[in-house]
Length: 133
Length: 133
Length: 133
Length: 133
Image 1 (cartoon, rainbow over the protein chains, first blue to last red):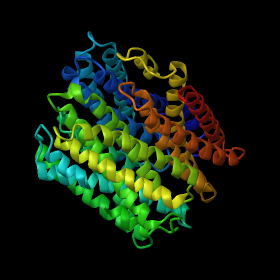
Image 2: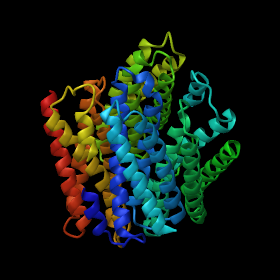
Image 3: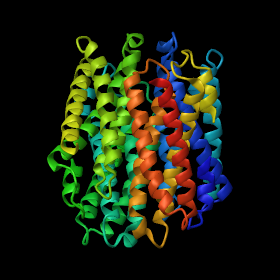
């Protein structure tokens, strides 16, 4: 995605580990879109009643991943406590949503793909957090 | 706002303290809109160069408050770890943005109003967190 | 909401009719939160299968109202074609969502309240558009 | 991105031209993140005062692209008037932002990259609109 190139042309170098940062931005954006799609695919299933918790956590996860992706994208004058707390919230949302999607992975391919996207984003968040602390 | 009435008509009662919840939703939505406005008002000032950090933290705070406001609004099948981590991220963003806005409050009325909105939202987050733990 | 006061302290006066603008911002923010809540309340109902289209249009309407509310809140250096197209998209989303919610208003109080919020926001959009053209 | 695979596993086939849809979703998400990054890079420049209109249109464009990307991602029970009005708003935002970024492309590489992302997204919107009408 273009955002990777953008950050390389930014007038102020990031204060974070650049590889871990770029990967985390990428996974946040991917996970946000995947969760939006999984919520919608669940709504279209005949057994939507069984997928209510999945839809709800998908919506939460999409919102947190999008906000975190925006915050991580910004390099100008960051506040590290805000950055850290956002990544922690993102990891928590990815874990909860990934666990719930995994429960439906055998029946719904979209839940299987979404569980994987959540796992990757959770890991990218933890890896980035490890470079900040 | 209508969302307050909406939550009272929800088919599933909230698992959280309802007064603290309703106040926190209200402050999140108010703070999000106020921060969006403060970022824009700062951009319109002649001394925008002095307000760069304020704009950046306003944008972060608006994004986190909006995501948290959405998550708190949802009552169906919540994950309390996600709820808690989101409120913590929101409080962190409100503190950082409120501190920065307060530095410009004497020169810019929009920063003074925004600092107050951030303080109220931070407090509403802390009060709601106290009822969850 | 504080955003109303914020716009009065903005360094650059709005180019739009201020009363129509302030009302439209207010209705966009109210409708966004109400639609987020209605989607969630529908998810919590026993007859969620009957409410799938309502949830979907609630989610669309919340997203468009939030984006439009942010754009209208910004007074610095607007592009009127962007402002106009956003308001038109918002009115379209409010009409579609309001119509669908109205179909469920007799059975679900949250749909009745949401249909009303959509109607008010649609009207505020049309009134503001009338002052731009 | 995973969202492309997700839409292929959706229980309900899209009513739109799938190639044009997938490309438009992709460009909306790319343009949203690029505009968020360009607004932030502009804020970090010494000549931020010259870039105020660019920041403002970047923020608008990011908000509209994100909302449109979400709406296009949803395949369940769409309302085509909402879909069409959202794509039109997105194209308008991309044109305005792309034109402004192009004015700064010679001085700022991030504006040059962002102008290109806006052009691609505008074109993907127009191509998708052509398949709906």
